Each structure stands twice: as structure tokens, then as C-alpha cells.
Image (cartoon, one colour):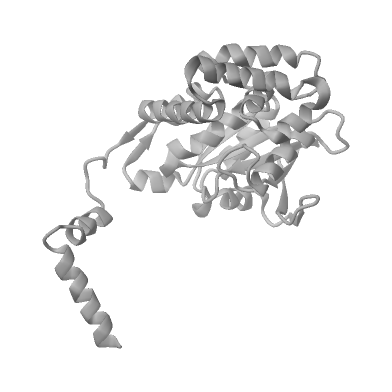
Length: 308
């Protein structure tokens, strides 16, 4: 029986736990990541001739190193993808996305794709997105991200089998995808220079991803590359970019990713309720009205005093 190891990644409140429970069933183990109090939840399931180990990574909005959850998730992927690791290497990253908040969730997706490990994007809560009038072209998203995309609703038990099949197909490389790459335009020359400085690095990770993270001044990645590259050389490229374009690299990369997410959203999503008012919109229109707002406020105060 072939062994597959999967890292389950996603932003908080994307329904990641429902996907974990959907595919891993009752065979689950909970521990702590080494040195921290963050839970490490591992599940196992068998599918056809495969045994899959799925590790539920801490929910994180990005792949920086600012929060403990971000540090833990990144360290896990760095350590578990190392060919010299005693543990089985991670084979696939499954990135769970809240379909109703596609733009925001893609910010993390871009960073995961740049690592160089095969990624499967799971459009979770697809039923909620449809109820909100969102029509999502998952095939087009797959083409633009150069990775498999699966539609699911973890809370309703929809899409579990399709995800398991996609995991095994990705492991066997049944569908080949081009390498995902965002063209960061004026920053590209600086990325290339950092990549050249990393040529002698023995890191198993994508040199391009390492270069991007170093330009983001990521302390975890700086520690990972160690003495193979001097911080002064990185600072030189960061300062050069700032001098030439009057922008800092961290903000530039963040803005570029959000803009790229916006492009994918407008290419792949139709909002049929765009001009329809929600109940919240209707209530806001009344309570925030300059004529009705004060009488409503006085009425609420009266009710509160009346009750007391």
C-alpha cells in the first residue's frame, strides 16, 4: 500500500476542520507541535491502494513569520519536505479556501503555490457561495493557478471522494501542470539576483520562493538559508528596489498578490446578486438614515430605560 503525506492549509474560518473530518474519519491523533502549544492534528484514511496521512496545519492568513501559527505552519512544511528528514516527506499541500471569500483566501494560495510542492485548491463552502449568487468557474481557476481545483462543502459531506481521488491522482502525477509563477514586474530583477546568491545553497526548497521570502525579510527563511547568503546582500537589493521605485518590498509583494487575486476573481467569478440588497443593507439604510437615525436611537434608549 502506497503512503501519501498531505499538509492541510488554509486561512481561519475557511472550513478546514470540516474537510479534515470529511476525509480522515475517526482515525485521528492530536498532539502539540514541538516547543509550542499549538495543536497538531493528524488524520489517516485509506483510499483504493493508498494510505493517506493528513496533517491539519494551524489556520493562517499568510505564510509570513509574524504569528506563532504562521511560524509553525511554515516550519512544518520546511522540515517535512526535507529529503534528509527522518519523517516521511510531505507530498502534497491541500489548500482549503472559503469560496464566498475567494479574493481574500487567494493571498495565502499564491504563497503556497510558490513553495514548489504540489498544491490542490479546495473551494470549500461552495454551497454558501452559490446561495450568495456567486457562480465560480473552478476549471478556469485551475488553469490560472496551474493546479487541481476541487469543489466541496465539508459541513454537508460534499466533495470528499473527489478530493481523495485528486490527492492520489496528484501523487501519481496523472495530470501535469505548468509551474505557477506570478510576474512581480519591477521586483523580478532583484528576485533573480537573490536566486543567484542562493545557487550554492543545499536547500531543498524552490530558490525563487526563498528569494521572495528573503526580500520580505522573513526571519524563518533567513535562518533556513543560514551562512549561504549574507543579510547585507539581501538588504542591498531591498534598498536598491526602494531607491529605484520608492516602494518597500514587503508592501509591494502584498499589494501585488491582492491585485493578482482581484484579477482571478473578476475572470472566474460572476456575482448574480451584485445589485441586490441583503437584509443587512436594508437595515443599514434605515438605521443610518440622517432623518430616522436619531429617533431610532432615542427609541432604543427609551426601551433600555423602560426595562430597567
